[in-house]
Amino acid sequence: MSCLGALCTDGFGSRDPLALILEGGRIASMERSAAPSALLAMPALVNAHDHARPLRASSFGAAGKPLELWLAYLSLLPPIDPYLAAAASLGRSALGGAATVMVHHTRFRSFASVSEEAAATARAARDIGVRIGVAVALRDRNPLVYGPSDPILAALPPGPRAEIAGRVSTPAPDVPTQIRLVDEVDAALGEGIRAQYGPTGPQWCSDELLIAVAEASALTGRRVHMHLLESRYQREWADHQEKSGGLVRWLADIGLLSPRLTLAHCTYARPDELELIAMSGATIAVNTSSNLQIRSGIAPVAAMVRAGCRVALGLDGLGLDEDDDALREMRLAHLLHRGWGFEETLGDAEILAMAVRNGRPAVLGEEGGGRLAEGEPADLLLLDMDRLDEDRLPIAPEPGGLLLARGTRHHIAEVIVGGRSIALNGRLTGIDHGAVTRELLAAVRHGMGSSRDLAAALPHLEAAMARHFHPPGCC
Image (cartoon, rainbow, N blue to C red; front, side, top):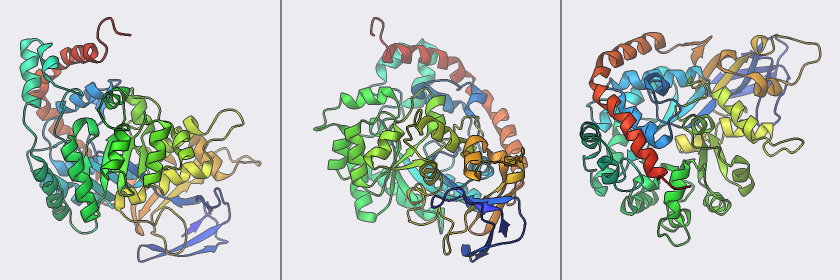
């Protein structure tokens, strides 16, 4: 294929005409080309933290809710076909420029088993053509707030109390059963897709469970994907734990901090904690839009970089416009963290590496990719420069500058994964995404009537949570 030029972390913004030859799913050669083209090549993007949620949360009233309440709103979704749910979400990811997606499977979508849901997710990924990793959610405490649920339930009127209690009273499986579940999911995913341990976060996992995950990961070499310090309430909870040296030091002491670990968010990680994470070789998946959408704050990305952390970008199912636009997510992260005035804390090439390279090992469990070079995987994003540079002035900036100024999914001409075209001119090639989305919406509309009692209970839960996290008379 002929390209106008290329964007890559090594030599950001080249306009040298380029001919890419793809063979066997890899880039066989890269040569100068005299053939005219309006396409600009770059590595396809990586969504290093997501949950493959089927629908936009704002559609059922969750917009602008704090994380701790927002999670309860997700229960409004009725049981739905897990293939439809995954295909709708992963299809949006592909159309938004992400060829590799981390699926942290934190919530049942149907009455099927976890292994069956994971197998359906894997089938959807193969049909679409995206690469995925699947982390199996593990948790065994604190279903409502970071502590006992009884005070929250006691603050609710009888009807809402019964509705909420019925949803949080089921005991979690014991620790050995949860660890074995990951092996079962791994077998169900099939070739080329790997399962990871997915402890949801220290505030939701007992010490026993986290220690078991650390030991199992060290024994098997399997990766771990976990939330950490996402909200300020989680920060306050962590600071009240009786851990010698603090929570992050304790995670290091039990062996959980390692190159096999991905930590989503770290919004409230402190400099000393970032140094521990950097020394361990763990990856941090920053989710800029998600943190803004659910009022969690702005992650200290510049401090992460200064500490030497490996930082990747995720969407967490909550892109700025809830459309899984990975290009816009990259731009937003760059705008927030590049520095003020003449100070540059995050360069153009660094943000591109976070978007296309740093997250691949975290999702796929293997190094490589995220580069335009001979022998690298042919995972490519082709941008339409006629649309990106529609003004076409005689003195124009480099393509990289235009991308970081205005690039969105609407400028994507084609997404290629392993040499296979999976999205072309705004349409998926492997599935009829429009038909999948219509079928999914019809199923949700039909089944959502069963959630009316929960919908009526949620305002009462919101009031109780607000009093819990901000008691009357407290600053």
